[in-house]
Length: 96
Image 1 (tube, one colour):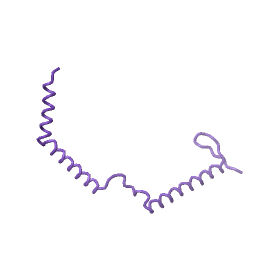
Image 2 (cartoon, helix red, strand yellow):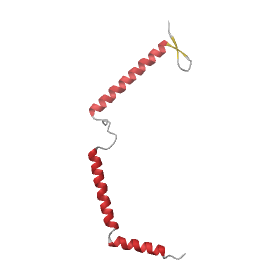
Image 3 (cartoon, rainbow, N blue to C red):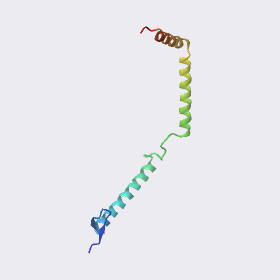
Image 4 (tube, one colour):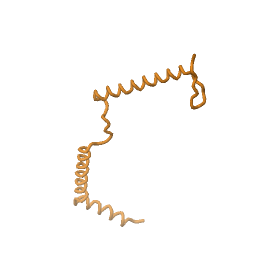
């Protein structure tokens, strides 16, 4: 004798099918949890750090500041300043 259930869409299903589905779903969840645990313990998965750590932020900030300082030195050098003044002067004195 089978028990019948009515799901949210109003369809009737047998209790045996629902029980099989529940067992399959539980087994799948258990397998997923065990697989994730095994991978985490073996070092295959990251431990939940989605971003950079504080030391990585510090190194990135230092690198960005060093690049900015080098770029500032290049832009303010006599050669580049003269070239920029020349380009701007030609653009302003151009014939239309």
